[in-house]
Structures are given as C-alpha cells and as structure tokens.
Length: 433
Image 1 (cartoon, rainbow, N blue to C red):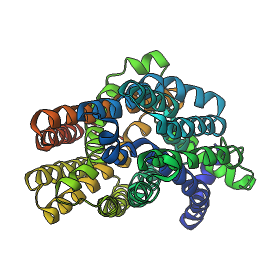
Image 2 (cartoon, rainbow, N blue to C red):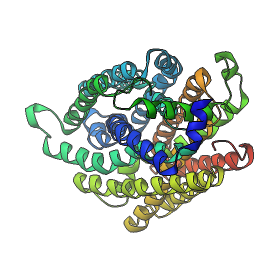
Image 3 (cartoon, one colour):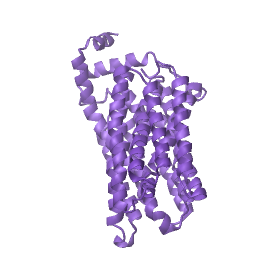
Image 4 (cartoon, rainbow, N blue to C red):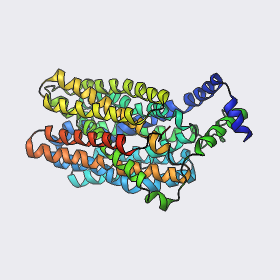
C-alpha cells in the first residue's frame, strides 16, 4: 500500500526517467531477438524464388510447407508459454532461439516435399512460445497504459527484418549461389539461421526474469516499478487454465487476431512474388524494393501506437489500420501490373497490417493477469497464427488454379475488414486502457 502511494506521488519526470531506463535495457535486445526470429520464419518467401525451380515444387507444395510451420506452432504454443511462466523467460527464450536457429539452418538440406513439410513443422515446434512469451514478459515490466508503444517498439522488429532482411536475402542468394556447390537458397537458410543460435546463448546472460532479479536497478526503483505493476493488475481478470479455455472473450480475441495474421502473412510470404509480378526480375532489386513497405511500416507502427497510448483509445486505432491494410491489398491486386501503384498500395497494406498488431496486444494484456495471461496470450496467439497456415496455402492453391494472386488477396482483404468490424462492435471501449 505504501509502495502504491509512493508510485502515485512520483513526479512525472521521474516516472519517465525510470521507464526510459527499463526500455533502454530491454527493448533493443528483445527487438534484436524478434528480428532474427522473423527472418528465420519468412525467409522461405525469398528462398521460394529459386527453391521451387531447383526442387520442382508446385505453388501448392510451397504454400502447404510454408503454412505447416504454424501447425507445429499451434500445437506447442500454450504448453511453451505455461512452461515459460514457471521457469522464467531467460532460460526458456534461450532454449527456443537456439533450437529454432538449428532447425532453420538445417532447411538447407531439403530435397523433397516431404522433407520440406517436416522441417517447416519442426521449425514451428521449435519457435512456439517465443512471441507470446515476450508479450507476457513485457507485462511484468510495463502497466497497460504504456504497453501499445512498447509492444510497437518491439514489434517493429517485423518491419526492420523486412528492411534489412529483404536486401540481405537477395544479396546472399545472388552472391553465394554456387559457392561450395550449394545454391543461393541453401546459403540463405544457413547464414540466417546462425544468428538465432548466437543471440539465444546471449539471452542467458542478458535477460532478467523479473524486476526483483534486475541487478541494474536500485532498490527504490524496483519497489516503484513493482508497485505500478501491482496497481495495474488489480482490475484485471485472474482465471484458472480451464476458465481461460472456456472464456468467450479470449476466443473472440483469437478470431480477431486470426483475421489480422491472415493479412500479415498474405503480405509477408508473397510480397517478393508480388513485386516480381509487377515487372521486377532482378533478385537483388526485388530485395531492395521489398524493404520499402517495411520501412514505411516501421514508422507507422510507432506513430500510431504512440497516438493510441496518448489518447487511451484502442478500438478505432486498431480497426482503422486494419481497414487501411485491406484497401491497400485490394488496390495492389487491381493494379498488380503497374509497379508504382502496386508498390504504393503494398506499402499502405504493410504499414496497416503491421500497425494493427501492437495495438491489438493491448487488448488481452489489459484484460488478463497471472496464469490467465500466460495461457490466454498463448491461446490467442496460437489460434491466430493458424492463419499463417491458411493464408499461404490458400494463396498457393489459388495461384496454381488461376495463375494469379488477385483472388487470394481479395480473400485476405475481406478477413481484415471482418477483424476491423469485430474490434469496433464486439470489444468493450475500456479494454486495453
């Protein structure tokens, strides 16, 4: 109680200084972890440009293999996050990163559709729990009113992975092709898998499991931060694991997240192909152009999330960016043969869909606490990420059937519109504040 009074009496400038210190310590490192995570998850989109021809895979085989990652991810997400909540973030996140780095590098040995499916499934198993684990970990440090901007700073790792990863992937595939008798896509998997192992080992020495364990914080700052978290959790819902699975609002949030992830991977897995379809053939140029939408998205994510934190408004910010993403996807499909218009539309779509994600995560983390948060976040993320299976598989089937990605993009746009409507009409106004 005394700590709570101390928290409320702390000057605004002192509060900002303490949270700035925490942010400087945590966010750049977690950002780095997420960058290497996302590179290993979606570099198959670049590998596809050579891999399909080399291995004689169809678009359907590629779409199924790309999507099977999320089946493994779905099956092991909830157990992984529950283990993390019990063992601590440091050891479990390190385990996740090292194992997924090894599996990702081993993708270079794929030769058959069956092996492709197996390795993508195992990659999902290895990575399960990383993202919801970090989201849960941030709730140990930041109250709900600060969380949109903080999650956005962390999640700009997606955009940054696109900014640096796309040119890097194009450069690796062009430069290393044929070296040591390996193709460019084999070198891509190997060279982009190694950093995950290195950073995973670093996690063991860098992260602290809690405010109390942070030796870089003085005692008075630890008490102040703990009091803020204690006050923040008073109004949240604590449920048993069974109650979380039976909670309708958790499943509503999972459906909304599914619709947004349809958009994320519709863009993420197919952006290089869409740019190639707009008339760009040089693989390095495709890499450089793919970076443009992600660069714009990084700026949009931070600006929109800051606006949401300042105003305390979550629903219209989230729905508005989902609608912008849907419109961008529709325009990119309609004008796919015009490089300038397609690039502009894809930039809007990428900025919109990426901006919905940190805004969305203020909703469940502002609603659940304790074990309920660990399980609820994992359920929402695992169910939502099944869209990572549905989206590329659907796109691959449609592309094989019609020789065009346009119809698939329209379906993805419809999913984003649906998610926006659910946020506005089914989510309470005060959730996430």
